[in-house]
Amino acid sequence: MSTIIVAGATNQIGHFLLPRLQNYNIVAISRQSRPNSDKITWLQTDLATEILPIKTSSQLFYSAPLPLLPLLLARLPQTTLLTRVITFSSTSRFTKEDSTDAKEQAIANQLIQAEIALIKECQQRNIVWTILRPTLVYGCGLDKNVTFIANFIHRFGFFPIVGQGTGLRQPVHADDLAQACVQAALSPNTINKAYNLTGGQTLSYHNMVMAIFKSLGKKPQIISVPLPLFTTMMRGITWLPKYAHLSTAMATRINQDLCFDCTEAKHDFNYQPRKFTDLGLCF
Ligand SMILES: NC(=O)c1ccc[n+]([C@@H]2O[C@H](COP(=O)([O-])OP(=O)(O)OC[C@H]3O[C@@H](n4cnc5c(N)ncnc54)[C@H](OP(=O)(O)O)[C@@H]3O)[C@@H](O)[C@H]2O)c1
Image (spheres, rainbow, N blue to C red):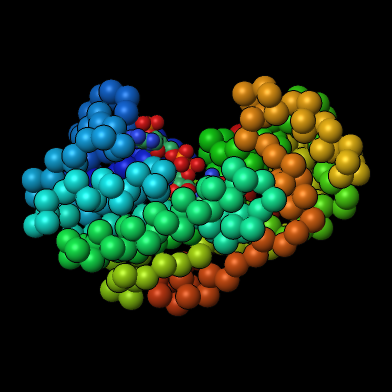
């Protein structure tokens, strides 16, 4: 039985991925110490600095921050027993590349450079790679998008959006990504390829917020705010750590379509994401 090393085992994708790997030897990575179970050996390690101890033929399922991965691979010997890497990147590498926000542009550039460096390191070590790029991820209350909206609604009873919120979104459930990871690893079609992974439904930002109100059992109260006022509100709250991830560029995008095509993933490894409005929202 081959070993699967799971990096990012404690995030929302890891949460759904670990139970799907019951037939493998699992080595799960975290910077925190965690107790082992029958099925999972936890390895307390910092991916930014340490060398992965790989003693048997292994595959790496990686959903920790992508920029750490090329250097992690570069620290492995040329003749490593690591045979396969399935890693998550993000469609942000496309949508934030031309952002007006310098921080967002830097994130997109980091992802682009990390993807290029990852492929180079894999080629040098004969490791087969697959890159999965999800759109907006949600699913178990650990994300900063859907859960942020839900928590805001829960607290204030309404949700503000810029203009009409017409921009299209394709939220993708973390469990569908976990399944995609396993299916991609099993399919020979995915060797040395990258895929954009969307959710199973395309809906406007406004309708996504409506669906979140519905799942919370609350009457929708969506307030349309003009961009200048929204920007001023943002500046007023982003100094709070809880809201530090918000940016005015994000507000502008509420009316922009962020859509991708996952036909290739459907064809190559039978990717079948659920609809956002199906059951599966939990906060
Ligand atoms: N969130 C989204 O909407 C979204 C959208 C598109 C794509 N993605 C992609 O999906 C993946 C998961 O994203 P996420 O936001 O759920 O998780 P994340 O915040 O990117 O990753 C957190 C995970 O990485 C681990 N980690 C971070 N630094 C580490 C280090 N130095 N050493 C060891 N482990 C480290 C953490 O483990 P410990 O804290 O336990 O150490 C945790 O399991 C990422 O590749 C992301 O780019 C996310």
